[in-house]
Image (cartoon, helix red, strand yellow):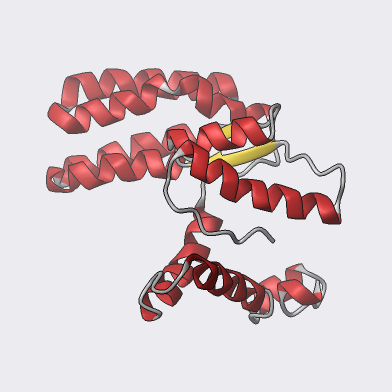
Length: 205
């Protein structure tokens, strides 16, 4: 549902595109209101979802925060692994208090052992403690966008092989919709089939 193409990543265009998803979801379930949404922190995405679903909890993707650090820290060699261990310890904290403690230790370690843009990105992660803490209020929420990212890799390849968005707007939307429909019939892995009581693909669930 709602596999709509957006002409840009602005709040206004994303709101229109996500609005198609909202309208189609409400056709199936009139009282549909998501409790949470996981985002990469893009202001346009946050703004669009906040308008469409006023009481939704916006869960920032921890993976994207780590990727911003990793992109700038690959030259740190052995220190890179120490930093990665400390960052992911924050993610795996079992309680809000535990997370606060690990963020404090990460901040102190970064101030002593890192510098430049790498230090800046690690400290930026630490300043978002309140956003990471939202996880503990919504136990069923996604804390990373891993599931979506895997899906979008397939989608990106599909559009790349089709020369992206050549043609008019209507044909681009139809290509997007056809891919989404076909995806519902892709065979699941044996493990996922078992987890879904024998259903072999999303459409048969």
